[in-house]
Amino acid sequence: MPDIALSTPLVSPEHLRAALAAGATPLIIDCGFDLADVGAGERAFAEGHLPRAVHAHLDRDLAGAKTGRNGRHPLPARGDWAATLARLGVTRGRAVVVYDAQGGMYAARAWWMLRWAGHDAVSVLDGGLQAWKAAGGALEAGASAPVAAAGPYPLGTSLVAATDADALLKSLGRVTLLDARAGERYRGEVEPLDARAGHIPGARSRFFKDNLDAQGRFRPAAELRAAFEAFGAAPAQVVHQCGSGVTACHNLLAMEVAGLPGAVLYPGSWSEWSSDPGRPVAVG
Image (cartoon, rainbow, N blue to C red):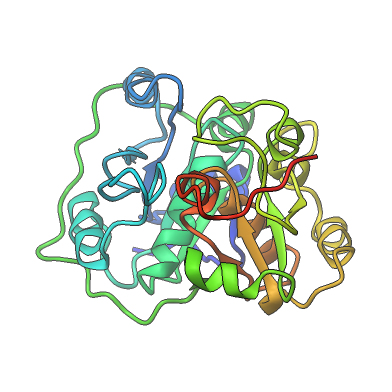
């Protein structure tokens, strides 16, 4: 059977519909989630999801065990992630499409993590569930019923770059650090989730929702490229962070869309950084 051609990190709902109609068989993963109600994504999935999709839960599937000092959504061990990928049905070479109903914030995390496993055939559904429905896409109801792969996903060389808190601390002032959180959290005016308010010293604000247009789709590549180039750093010198390493992936995805690959993720992000009272904090 033909498979969907994934030449960019995004796939439009129109392209996906046409590919499915032509017999393509990508694995579709629904990543819908709600930080304030961790069961909401699964309930929404049961009410309606893309045909033959499976559901990935942010806390259980797209994050590892928390210690209280490693952030709210630490990366799992790569071996554990390989087992999760197999359980979801991911196999080497099979195209994967990830989506959510939250502007791509959780789908982007799955996109980054699949590339972290060495899986390059992965795209985010541009506009997510809303755009799929607006394009006339059909939905199915019911619980997720993945067909597990025969064994753990065969991990390859990571296609993405990451850093940790110690390395980031040593590099402050020498890298361009972009914070994907909303402005009021970046400035330290409010902090609903983490131990302290503020931001990592030297970080600059780049709210992830600024990557989207009024319809919830990613802005044109040229527009995104201009926005990120305005920070004045080559991609390899850009480190992305957010609250817990989730929405930072949205900025990484936007840079890929813009033709600016190679930026770095700090997975622990503010939730890890702020858990250590010895680490410096800035406000304003």
